[in-house]
Image 1: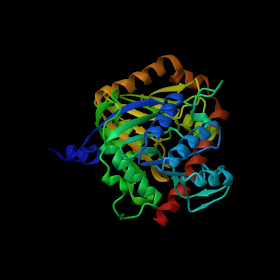
Image 2: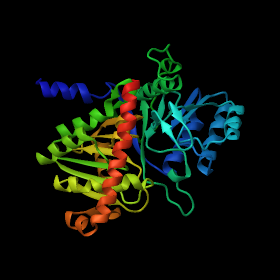
Image 3: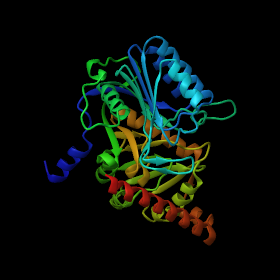
Image 4: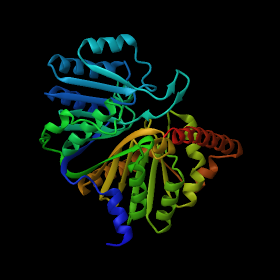
Length: 396
């Protein structure tokens, strides 16, 4: 084994055990499964998410969790202290009275207008250390199919097996503030069992990014994906602003003939980010990266497939905020059946739901004023990320 192969083995080898897994579309499909899994719980439930809104979808999930708590199931909810600050004291008191344990993940400093510190951006749900959901889907009407308002386009991975136990341990660590060492958790006593018959048997790897704790596993997954891809990569990312290392790996991959397709949001909930993203279109088109903007609704998915062989899915956006200022969680999936299934979904998006951004189209749709606005957006975001990550490095 040469040095390059050893480096690849070290950086992207998945968990050694096989697990069952299936792709779950956001919206009704996801929330129906979530409620179903809550109903199956017998021991414990962990729900950790970036956004938990007290709306119709939030109430639906809350009522199911309350019902579980009434059956003496241990229920733990943890949400990001900034993104979920709209949660009222009444809502918290209500769920706590029902027997649910609730906690905010707090940044170093925050107010309604200001945030400094890590975001808990991962979205993970674990039942009995046996079944789990990991993806980019928050608990909010925006991510659910509501009358007259289709869900934002997103995906999650349903898993059963040893990986669910690992995810349960991760939830306990987050709940306890990521201690360096922990006493054995209740997860370690439970033996995962397979449940859903239509899930694929897959080799899975849990990947994390947490700059403070020197975790950059997801960033490494992407860099290794670009370095070792043989034929093609398809990326679907809601806020695509790759940093220098990933841009270099992307450029090198395209330069050696790897076909790279990137699906970005046509309509974004963060327009500053979209303007900055479009500033990078010139660079991507120059490097023969195929670009597509998704049209039907807001694209919130974070999935990439390599060579129809394996994929990574979770909460990680390809930008420096996810790389250096957030707690992120992805699952690397080594299963050609699931990889091809995800690839077919994205291929259909490209054919029916996207606008192709060619060099000609890009030049026709831009002018000096637009490019200046995009450049300003890019520089503002770059400065904001630099300020956050520079100070986080000092704190670390």
